[in-house]
Image 1 (cartoon, helix red, strand yellow):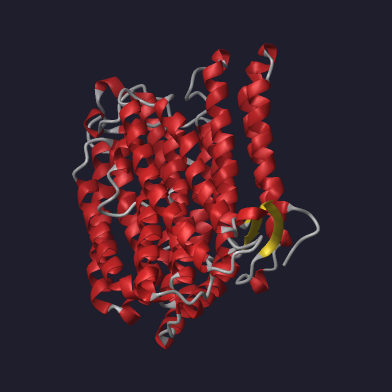
Image 2: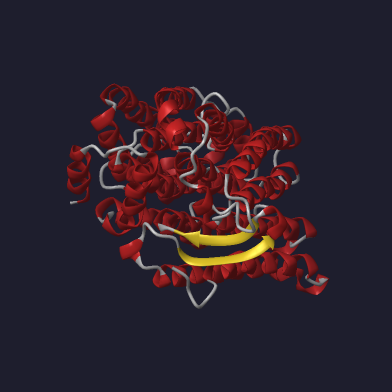
Length: 514
């Protein structure tokens, strides 16, 4: 379904224009760098709300707000964008996080009086990344998707390598090498899929490549190439090792966008490309992928428990959470796939809040080591309470949004793979350990002398996390509107994969919604 107004193109172009504006901003105007970036982010969010209002939620399974224009006709490449309920949900989550990151990290690259070129370059990269994120979640051309998949590496590489910690160059290069390795393997598969398709000026459109009759062996190789690239991006065990280093060394705002948004491209790609393009290979690989997902859940949680660095701890929790998302996708029930789609949004909210609050702690203490904290609950009660709510969401406490998505994944998976669901449930127990133990070490006990005068959250910092906490609670008690966006695409995905839904899962999904 197309729209008279090019909502998606506007969402892509606006942050690019904002980035260009920051680059060419004359010297006298540099003291408004933050305000300009924040203004662009707020307008972008308003545009996304307009796109939501223009979206027909009763037909969330179909691509809407569609635009298709020839880009490289000789090679069948098009500028083709459009969103179903899942893509729109992820875009909304992404454009919400960007202005909150800018607001939370107001002093991250220097004080207000020091609005330097360094800050200007950093915020310009944030806006460029936002444009790429919106584009990749709405791309309907496989080659266009691949270009964006690789292009996103560039701003993130400079955001880590140019603005991170002491080991930032190592972390940035490791991130880039992992991403390029997966992307180059994926490029071979993209060309292979195109050669098997109808060719022509729009030969790379996903609808033209879905449902192809492929040689079984070729289909498996193509699937594996796509899946590997997405598993690296997600990240999944055992190709996850770039993430803890990147999260530890990157600026807090970069880590928030990297883990809260960018990594969703991996699971989004599995859901929207791997399954529809390679249905037989997806069914063939599902048992192994499910085992890897369960391993990721337990492995990430266990390593999170043992971390001494706060940022690395949050990164490892995400490895565990992405295991749940992948498990739900490859369990092949409408309940589990809808749960995974909703989980992608909820993980962005809870992990984004965790990183932002962790950033507040690090900025006050000057250290990421958990052992350097203690007793802060008595000194900064608002900060402690905010961290606790975000942590409880990460461990899927009932009444918070992540619980809804996690229970849908587990119930949906149990309907087809009960053993995997039972073992994966141990991740919930481990999550309680790493969240509550971290809270205990950071906020309870006697107050350290050097922390006795630590300031609590100021108004700007509260505004940066309040929307995330509010959405966690709203979606925890009223998940229906969000689930209405992701359930219909889940049914379509099952049809494309050629798997019959398990009837009991539909009943479980309705029960959880009530």
